[in-house]
Length: 201
Image: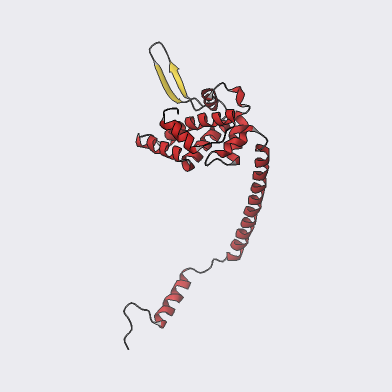
């Protein structure tokens, strides 16, 4: 009886099995490595427990502020909302969204002279944490909001670098966040899209 082409015989399989086992023998300190791995895993689990507890605390604290409304934005959970609200409330401090955006330091620096009027890199005025919080909201929206996903694609199609597109999205995210904080009305994707198409954004 002929053997089907390509099939291993038992003896050949055993030969290669022994060779493969010999290629990767366990290191001499295998037990110590396993112990360290188990210790690191236990530490990771404790850290996750602490993070979950802090998240519950953040949710409870945020619920008592106007910043809770930001969690209605797609891709913006309690931590992102709390980070931005912590530096933006009370929102009445800012006359409009542009003042809030300027406070984050994402507005372009303006260079002026008798013959020159040029915009440069972002000013970086204000707190870096405020700036990072807004960029985080913009990123969340760019991943989860159809309107922002579409806008992000348009910016890239125009040749913008990823960080430039993020900054541009942050400006729109700031206007949207400002409106939510002022009106305390939850985000409505359909209404926002209609407003954008009609030129209100």
